[in-house]
Length: 86
Image (cartoon, rainbow, N blue to C red; front, side):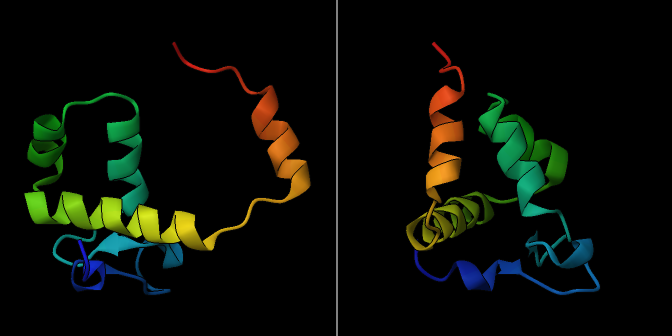
């Protein structure tokens, strides 16, 4: 999805400057954390009152960030030492 900027904003006065959904002010990290924990998408959508397009925008934002972010050698070593979920 292109155009995640339509759904996600950053403002120092909202969520301490962390990305949030423009429609509701819900922090992006909160939605991603629930999904990463295995909570079904439908339950996340119901709990936070977010749309399918907003969920897709959050994934698009995360992908955008992952493409831009470089991981330092020190961080890579730390990541390798973390246990892998089955």
